Each structure stands twice: as C-alpha cells, then as structure tokens.
Image 1 (cartoon, rainbow, N blue to C red):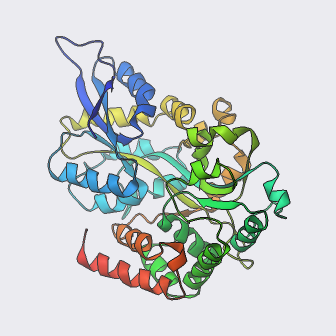
Image 2: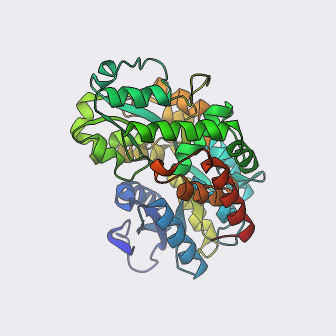
Length: 395
C-alpha cells in the first residue's frame, strides 16, 4: 500500500527550489511510471509525481481510499473507479474542479466518459480511461460450439455452446457489472439511473437477468464473476471470456494471444435488439487536502492530454477518453477489433453517476453470488437490499 520508491519520478532537479511532490494513488501504479515521469519532466520543475499503489480489488480500493481521505492521508491525486465517483462527489474529500479546467477536460472526450464523472450537472473528476466489455474466444472454439460470432449471440446460446464442447465461459468484472448489463439488455435501455435500475430489477428485466444466470449456473461452465477469469480462460479448457477490452494487453492472456478472437458482448435474450456491455473506467481527481490545488490540477491536465492518453494505451491497453487519440493511427494497432469496440462504447450500459449506485452495486455483489444460489426471487432481494443500504448511508 505504500509509496513505490522506484516510481517517485521526475526528481532529477532535487535541491534548492525542489519541485512540488504530488502523491498519485492508483491501482497498477507501476504501469503508469512512464507517463508520470513524462508529465513531471514537462512541468519544468513545477512538480514531480510520486506513485502510490492502490489495492487491486475494487471493493478493497474503495474502503482503503475512503479511509485514507477521511483520515487526512497526504494524497494529492487519486485514480477513482467510475462506480465510486458519484459516492465521493457528495463528500468533502475531493476538490471542486475549476470551471476553466472542467471545460478543457470535457473538450473532445467521449460523451459516455464525461457523463460518468458528471454528477447533478457538474464535472467532479477528469475522464481518464473508459471502456466496454467484449466477448473473447479462442481459435475455432466458437465454430465447434456452433456459434456464429459475426453477430452478438445470446447468453443462453453461449452457455449451451460452451457446455457442448466441454469448455467454459469466464466472467471478468463484478457481479454488479454483469447484472447491470443483463438488465439493460433486457430493458433495451443502456442509460439507467439508480431508480430505474431498482425498478427494472423488480420487474421483467430483473427476471430475464436471473434467468440468464440460472442457465449459466446449470450449464456448469464457470463460477461467474471472478478475479481469476482471465487466467482461467488462458488455461486448459478455456473457451470464452467476457471482460474489459484492455484484457488483451494483460499478461494473463499473453499465452493465448495468437489464437485470441473478439466478438460483441452477448445479448440478454433472443428478444434483445442490442448488446449492452458494461461500461466502466477510472477517473482522475484532486483531493481536497492536496497541498497545492493549482499544481495538482495542472498535473491532471497533463495526465489526460493527448500525449499521455496515447502512452496510456501503449502501456496498459486501456481505452483513452480523447476521441482524437482513440481514432488516431498512433494507437490503431493497439486497439483490438476497433469496430466491435466502437459499437460497444456507443451501446454499452454505464454505471450511474450517483452516490446511491455504490449501495446498489454492493447489494448485487452479495445477493447474486454464488451463481448457483441465484433464483427467481434474487432480483427483488437485491433491490430491497440496495434500498436498505441506501437508507442507511455509506457502509
């Protein structure tokens, strides 16, 4: 959890008039050493960025970040999961984004990435990376499973096909990601707020989502959402994987990169017209306790500018929020299946930018696991639990 000493970059100018030290809290911190160094150098001695490793687990990251900020930890910049943005926006833990900076951060960004960090009409963090989930498969497994991957297949067909060939369907991300996408697909409405999601869970869309999970569980093709999804997919018997598009750049998939194929995210049912993959990402925010707010926002501006966005794709495979970078020749070879990715970004289901979404996500994460325990009553139970958590405040 401590600072990565080897990543305290841009310190060559140490001495009289030392640059401002900015502590940047982010998961997979080592991957961002180069971009942190570049921005530190570009500041011409104004600041140096020191990377602080955050937990890999989203839930552990939330708990650790809230604790650090609430107890006055000297963090200046934080990488915030888009699912957490709405919750933090209602606190005094993040600094307000100056109007001029906010206008610049919105310019040229994908609409969905800006919406993900906009709460009650106000930009509360900087869009950094934002991406959809897609369906990965290996070699000829889809053909052997009897699936036509030129179009989105339904979850039930995918489950049956994987079972037919003795393969598996691994699910990356959280139960909340999966259920949100299933519900959005059943409702054929990607942009559902918390109230709409709660209502949908209590209705036919929630029933359709539960039916998909029950069929998946009955097919015995995987455990559902798992942190080991990518590595299991790359191992013996791995056939299909739903997960963020950036997984293509992960070490976990390196052994199967040569046989990796990408298809649209599965449809909730045969009556669903459009694939609604989960959309999520990480935003950059300045803490209210930052030593120098102006300098911290200067660093955020650099970290989200075009050169840093291009370096982001190269280093991590995450999709940039700047349209000019996403469609540039510089990163064209780094984005797998651009057409599939573009459609997924356009049609995907974002996390609601609301403080109440954290309660809903936690309720889904607990009531929809394990997949073998999901029944017809699960959607209503998760909605009731979400309302209970919401009425009880942060937990």
